[in-house]
Every structure is written in C-alpha cells, then in structure tokens.
Length: 267
Image (cartoon, rainbow, N blue to C red; front, side, top):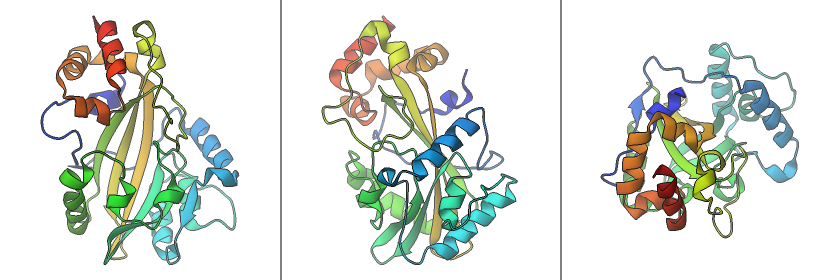
C-alpha cells in the first residue's frame, strides 16, 4: 500500500471540515521521494512563467523568509544555486513542498508570502495579503466550524511542529491546478473510475519561527489513482462512499453523479 493512503481520514461523523492536527514527533518535516527531480524541474519551469504567479510576497517578509531558508539548510537538503531570488522563493524551489508564511496582525493571521507551485484550485494572487477566513473561501463550513478554531490554534502554536492531511478526488492529476473547472469536474463512468479519478492529498505542516508572530505552513501534494485507495482500503472507502452525508462528498469535490458511478464500480 502507498504509505500515505493509510493516513487518509475516512470517518463519516462530525463536520466534513476538521483540523485533525497532530504533533509531528519523529516524522520527517520535509522529505524526498522518487518524484523529487520531476517536481523540482516543474517548479523551476513554473517560476520562469510570469503568468503562473507561483511566488508573491508582501513588504517586510525578508527576515522571516531568511529563517525559513536556514531551517531548510539544517535538514541537509541542497538549496538551488540561483542568485537574486527572494529567500522564500529560493527555499520553495529547493523542496517539493510549497511554502506559505503567515503573520499575526490586528486583522488575524495574514498570508504574507508564498511559494505556491502546486495549488489545489486556488490562486495565490487572489489570497495574498488576506486573513485565513478569506484564504479559505469558498470552503464549505469553514466560517462556522473552523475560523475561530484555526485562529486560536495559530495563536497557541508552540515550538513543536504539527501536521495534518486532507484529501480530495479529482479527474485531473496535474500538479499545478490553480483554476476551478467552470462546470465542475467531468463525470467519469464506472468502467474507468479506478484509473481516471485521482486521490489528491496535501500533507501540511505548521511551525513557528524564531521571530515572534510568524508561522511557516508547508504543503506537500501527493497523488495516486483512486484504484490504489480502493485496493488498499476497500472496506473503509466503500463504507465512506455509501454512508457519508452529501456534504462530505461535496467537500471532496464529488458531484452526486460521480458518487453514483463510483458506487457502480464498487459493486
């Protein structure tokens, strides 16, 4: 089984959106896998295309970004050798994770800078300089269930890094996905479910910086055909797709028609 598939939450109670944050402990903060060369090459290519908008920063972010660069150097990961880059951009092009810097202000926690090459249906240019509630629009139930929890959690975050994992089902396995389909994802029929639908998951970590009032948020996108999830956790996934409320399906980017096709495929 692909290791991270075992970390996917397939519960059907409570809210479809939850924090699910755990201490990082002995788990790696950043890690290298067989996709490293391919993903770093894609990041480099995207960074040279001004239309991609994969790096943006507000004034006053350089010192915090230097801290991020230092943290990555301490892991032993080799940094890219390019001059005249903002330190957070250099950091972001050196690792597979995307990197976001948020700062506490009177308006809440603000997204001040980010190296975001692999967004999951959101544009950095539309979110930079905004607080967490605005960054998470249009996530269903975020204002009701998570807005105050997230801000409070950020306020209380200590020195120990934490992590969480989310997941969605997409019909496109492109890593760079800033745009939402205007008419939603196409419905994949039951005979092609396993190979033409993909589980897209983000392994996210949060850690405070040595400069008070700053948090580094990392996003590692991992993907695999839905068939891998079905093969490794068939009973859990079948229970989830059968019994989860419609709001859970919608949160995972599944339309009613797509759920019906998945049920046919599962028999």
